[in-house]
Structures are given as structure tokens and as C-alpha cells.
Length: 255
Image 1 (spheres, rainbow, N blue to C red):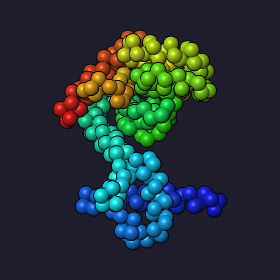
Image 2: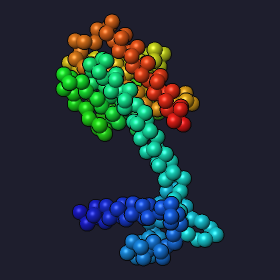
Image 3: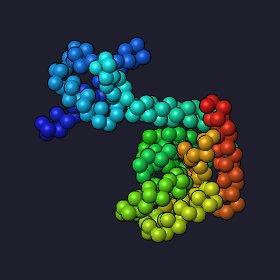
Image 4: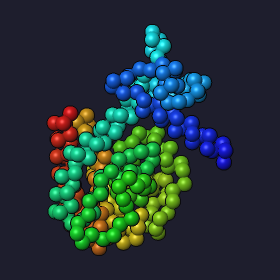
């Protein structure tokens, strides 16, 4: 327990160091950080060394002071991008929800999982087990299938080496079958999931592409499996693709 508390304390203090750097104070030395945070110089030095190894801070060789590194910039851009994506997408997803009368999700890929950053529900929606910020598996959701299908071959292979959990009797857990499914999703430009994460719930998803042609998210419509017959699925796909295209156009204008 003591070791765990020490680790948590170190993480907390490392985050405190990162938050000290601002536009007004972009650089600080060990003594300044020590005084500002009330930490021993040896502790500050040790934490800065760890942060430097991960490029979260860098040392100015001339001033001998530290400033935020490129990794911190990457994290900032990731947050900014996600905020812009939500800002641009939300009114379009609201319109889509009203049109389809289905639960609409937007998800992003993060290390083999899907993170939902938007969820909108019609007034009479079927209860789902998803929520904003929740992580769900890639192999049994339509959003996850779309996002994985656009990852590198090495990333797909890495994930398919792991044991895939069956959430229902419809969940695809065979790696070869799932790989074939990924190829089909990539070719068709959409993915469908029938009763794979929760019995009685189906979804269809399409990718969201930035103006560089990169898949940055996926949007889906989810609801009762009884409503996901062929003609309805094709309608959902058409409206999802239209929404996705407009998101791409508006992101390009924002850029």
C-alpha cells in the first residue's frame, strides 16, 4: 500500500509540474519549480528526468531551464482536435438522430478500443449500455469494426493475437473470420453489428474522414435488431454517409 501511495504521489507531482508551464511562464528551472510547488529539488529533478524521457518536457541547453516538449504538444492537439470534432459534429448528429430515430454514436480509436465521444438518443429510444467516455471492444461494435478496418496491418495483427471476448452468442471471436470481416468493411465503407455486444441491439457505422483522407472517427446508428432489415440498413448507411461527408467538409473549413 505504501508503495502504491508513493507511485500515485509521484504521478500527481509530475502532473503538477506539467501544469506549471503556461503561455506567460513557458520555461522554469529546477529551483523555481521547487519553490513554486513546495517540492525538494531532488524530487523535481527526478520527475523532470522521467518526463524528459517521454518528451513531455525538454531542457533548453542555453538557459538550463525546462519547457513543455513535443509530446505535450501532441497531447494538446489531440484534445483540441477532439473538441473541434465534437463541436462540428454535434448539430449534424442531432439532426441525424431525429431523422433516423435511432441512438447515434461517434467514436474514436484508442489502442484497440473504441471511446464514444458523442451519444444522442431519440425520445423513444431503446435502452443501450453505452455512454460518453466509455470504452467498448472493437470486435463486436460497428464503430469498432470501421475504426479497426482502417488501422495498419501490424495493428490489426497485434489485436487479433489476443483472446477476443464473447459478449453474446453472435460475437465474432475467431481471428480469421474477423480479419475477413475487416477486409469487407474496408471495401464496402461501412460495418454492421447484429446482437454482438448486446442481444437485441444492432448498429451500422461509417467512417469520418479528415481532409487528408485519414479516418479519424466513426459514426453509427443503433437500435432494436428488428428495425435492422436490409432496406432500412441501406437507408441508415445513406444518411450516415451524408452526415459524415458534411462533417469532413466542415472540418476542412475549420482547418
